[in-house]
View 1: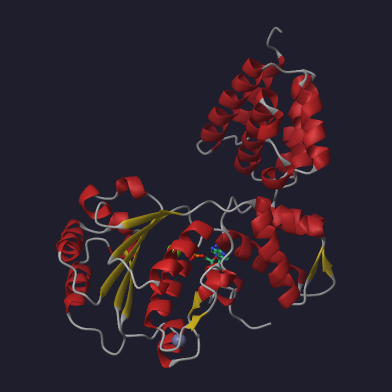
View 2 (view 1 turned 180 degrees about the vertical axis):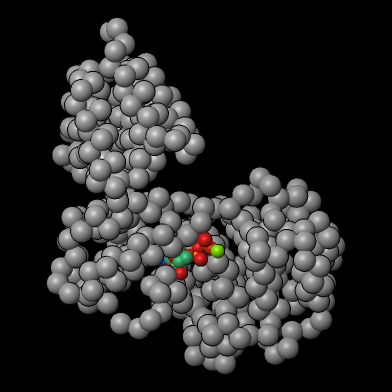
Amino acid sequence: MSNLVLYRKYRPQTFGEVVGQEHVVKTLVNSIAHNSISHAYLFSGPRGSGKTTIARLFAKAINCEKPATGNQQTVTSFEPCNKCSSCTEIMQSRSMDIIEIDAASNTGVDNVRELIEGIKFAPVKSKYKVFIIDECHQLSKSAANALLKTLEEPPAHAIFLLATTEAHKMIATITSRCQRFDFKKLQVPEIVKKLEYISKKEKIQFEPSALSLIALNSRGSFRDAESLLDECISFSGNIGTIKTESIKELLGIVEVGQVAQFVDYLVQKNTKDAITFIGTLVDSGVDLQEFTKTLVFYLRQSLLLKINPVYLNLQNSGFSRDEIDKMKAQTAGFSEVDIHKLIEMFIDAENRIKYATISQLPLELAVVNITYQQS
Ligand SMILES: Nc1ncnc2c1ncn2[C@@H]1O[C@H](COP(=O)(O)OP(=O)(O)O)[C@@H](O)[C@H]1O
Ligand SMILES: [Mg+2]
Ligand SMILES: [Zn+2]
């Protein structure tokens, strides 16, 4: 296996390889194919959902010397060739005409302003000069002003691709000059599919449930999923099949089964076993904040399930059929109001764990509170 970290190695190099985000890819590809490119795009969405990936792909596609144009009906009707000098330069991050700025690490730096103003000069060799500005909402004031001025009268060769995880923090005058795309958080099955693909390519065997465990713990971020996969591979030393058990150990991950067990104790108002359970978590090195997060996630799903079973479907919840059945049985013993109270209490506990001297105390107090309540 090469040293390249997985998330770099498997960054999609064609539009066809992008998972999900169909609405974005389709619109962008069509605009290239029909020669109706905008000067500014805003990509907003959660981390690891493909904003940088698609920005680079777009920059590559519009500057490609030999793009592949195919069937206009399919998403992949316009792909960069990945062979011409423009494509290779962009892939090796040495193109003079693609300028990437991370506003998060460059705030207040005045040369960002100069860089942005520099877009008025013609591209060195490409058709378009492309600016990719990451975490754009964090640009310094002077840089944001320079950007705004350029967006008011962009030179014909200039393209701005702005990416942000917090679109609401962007200045409205900038946003209104951009064509906006909202990236979706990726679903567990979409992430699993790519993890399967990567492990096949890397010739590494995983138990199927191991990959969904990784996907579940990446909270919809491909980058996190791929980094977790990396960790698991180096942890297991590339030999044999990687087991769910060892991943749990490695990541201190909490399994849904454990959370369900804990909720059982709460339903039964079994204070003693619930407190012992928390002690066991601490002893086995589980991150209590992570556990509580998973617990809140689980309770939210239980609440949704109670309100209407169709909210919790097998495809996108990340839960197995057995787990959903178990949840159904559990929620029979709770009213919506009960679950609401539990959620409030554990959100509160999660916040307090950060500052607690005895890290398990907030959880223990919540348990006592819940199990001693009159029903
Ligand atoms: N939609 C996607 N399809 C396939 N892989 C993706 C997708 N989004 C992210 N990835 C993977 O995650 C990594 C990080 O994605 P990136 O585009 O940098 O995310 P961000 O939205 O934070 O800019 C990529 O290198 C790629 O391997
Ligand atoms: Mg990014
Ligand atoms: Zn090319």
